[in-house]
Length: 202
Image (cartoon, rainbow, N blue to C red):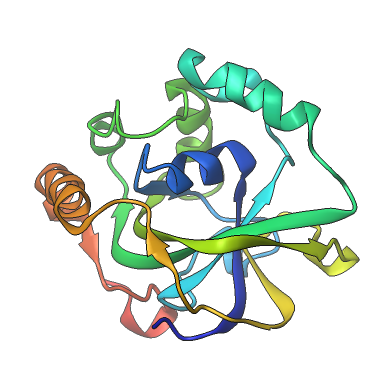
């Protein structure tokens, strides 16, 4: 049984859908302007996925995901958020080499152009790659959208810890391990500590 938590990770709704269907196990992040020095940090190993439509645009994802993005946008609600998936961080990679980002082609839904914009944005080029083991709730929760959830930030605090019982992995152990190990083979030189806090940056 997973530990209940009130921490949630903001991610595009289309990416949450891909993670929740086992279409990918990666989340690629630069860091929000409201985060320390605009640098992304992993605050804790497990959290809820908080889907958002903010900043989504069709040209930001590869063509095969654009119909799903349009469908999500057409049915999006602004008053509630659907919390359905729980994620556990299996690995963290800080990518300061653009060639490493390009090696991940085919393992995520983002277009190369949007990743290049993110990579070169700010004072330091780079991206953080999270490898996530994702689990599904028996039934989604619909939570009211609060003003505190807004803004360009990666992490938010929900009003209370959500129960994490009866979660089911979206990929079985063998499938997840295969994807995880293939990514590790591509990015081994870029591995970082699980928690990318100031005290353990390498």
